[in-house]
Amino acid sequence: MCLFVAGVVCSEPVTEGETRDTLVVLKQESETHSEFMKGLSTCYLPGQEAGARLRVAGIGELEPEDDLRGVHSIVAVGVEATQSVMAIKAGPPIISAMIPRVTIQHLSPVGRLGPRIHSVFVLDQPLSRHLSLVRSLLPDAKNLGVILGPNTGLYEAELNREASLRGFSIQSGLVTTRQDLPDVLPGILASSDALLLLYDPVLTAPSGIRFVLYSAYQKRVPVFGYSEGYVKAGALAAVYSMATELGCQVGESLGQSTGFAQGTTTDGGIKVNYPGFFRYKMNHSVARSLSRVTGKLPDGQPMTGEPGSESR
Image 1: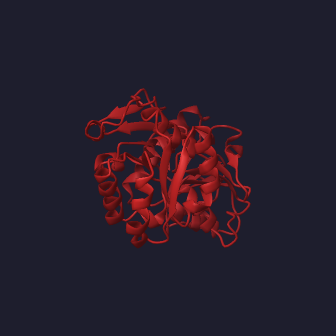
Image 2 (image 1 turned 45 degrees about the vertical axis):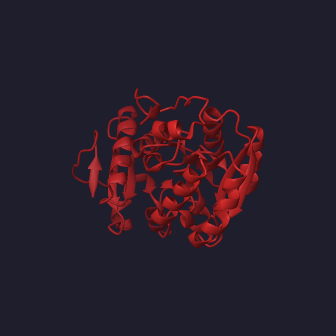
Image 3 (image 1 turned 90 degrees about the horizontal axis):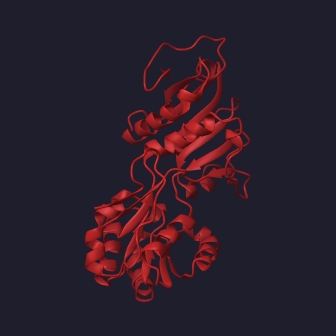
């Protein structure tokens, strides 16, 4: 186990009497989780009293009887880590971080994370932020296409409500497997001014992503994604957060007395926090080719003084 005292520095394990530790459980071989940890330690430790520490345990290495001694809170990074700490019958409060919103309902048989999960920090940007990006770049767009999967289909009513507030009519189609895309996508593209992609496990296969981007480009329909990778692959634009920014948000919440009470309460009683730091990126080559963009990229809210809007 590593102990973070100032920045990303390993030290000796804490003694039994200390009680201000936060235990971070993550996949240690993951570069993304390492970046998350850098952001968390950067934004958490400077504002803490002397002796405040972050301890890190890898998934599968956690020994509850020893590792939870002196720990006042747990941060579980990712779905696998969240499932791991949920299996511990007793212990300190838990924050689940870097999980997709659509997976919350699958983490337990009844769709609830349990009383020890006090809040969740999701990877997803709020629907309102996605829709505002589309409106900023395409101020005249009226019909917005959306491919809904088995999970995102549950948010259809919310999507229609948020879209209506911004003057969009949603043209949606439901796919249960990526094999449904050739049948569903043409109808959506034929009636849409733009296509918005939302995260759903069914729609993440590289072959499916390539098919969607190619089909939309052929029909001259701009695509809005949810990651920087989509923009590099041919989407017009995206709003997303870096792993360090997601970690910083969690670090800041740990330093607040109300940290466990943040977020929007869902039907399951879970406190859901959307990314507080985010940025926009646009592919100018695609914009020039489509000749559809008449608005401008909005300002983001990055973690540092870096630009919140980027182009390539």
